[in-house]
Length: 293
Length: 232
Image (cartoon, rainbow over all chains, first blue to last red):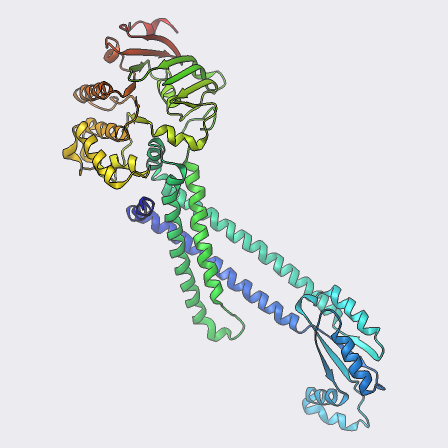
């Protein structure tokens, strides 16, 4: 009870500093939120690109229906394969005609259908890296009845590299934003604690435990963090709504994102206060202690 | 109650805060610690409330040993002591009642008991009528009495006073000294540091004189003013 009372007292008696801390936290959290939105959409983009990764296995022309269903069975039983879709010669031709569009007349010149039947082998996400694709491709290629396979080897390898670089950059950026937020917030809170170092000193003198001394400051930090998180989330949502119609489906925003910003705000307040108050415990100003107390 | 054995406090190379100090302080004693500025009075007091640990030697206060006390145990020791300073160290944004009750609140004393104890202690120091005032509305002497009330409200076995009269006028100095004597008469030991040799040299209480960190006199007899000139 005393701790809560002291926390609210601290906030109301030091309004200006509380407001500055709130402002710094809000700004940090807003940037953190923008970063999260970018990350979410970066992964969305990567997933969309990866969805296009599949193996197409072209069949020899002389296969019977039994051969084809046996082959489909074999393909489906491979580890990593999610779905196998059969495209008959006729379907391939129709697709080709559709792709040609206005130039589909050219196909009239053909006497027979030159396109082979094929299987589209769709894989689970975790099997879409170059190594697994290569292994599966070799296995499928060795199956009887398969004429040729195609999976965009070079493209997959480039995509894999780009994804790795993007994820790496994103992680480093996330780390920098998180750490710098904590650093800036902790230093701002340090100013508010400095203004009340007398109170800490008196508490230590009259025998308050460290936990008891630190708690009101932690509660204050958490309250400010939650408030700043809520306002930053609200503003992010507002800004998103403002631009949503122009951005279409491309940019997505989720409820989890707000929860993460709020949780990060709470953590920011807690860690920032913790770091700051600890600095003022057992540290008489201007005296080098022979041994810590 | 308090034992100090062969204690050195070395702040930096060749800079001794205290040098080879050995003392024993018994229950209910009244002691003046005196000497010129920088002689180690405050350092000696800080050793007692364990704001500082000796570089060599051992300090034992109410069963707590400086060599083995854990950080967590220091608050437990402090609850048995009362400490006052020259600059009062009052919280300017709280009234007198809150300043005194603060010492009880931070150690989770029940609210009803707090009120009872604070009102009684304020009456003891003669400040009941000022309980709703703020520190800046009081004179230096009154502020020091608030600080004394805050130290006493926990019913300590010893009151440590570091230059308590350094910031107050002669009349208030007399009042504060009388108050400390009354506190001592009720059984609480008092250790008071002061550099005002004139105030203590003829007092009947025990006097510990320090110079450059060393104890040069420990007596109940009158102190001679020359001691601070002679031994360098």
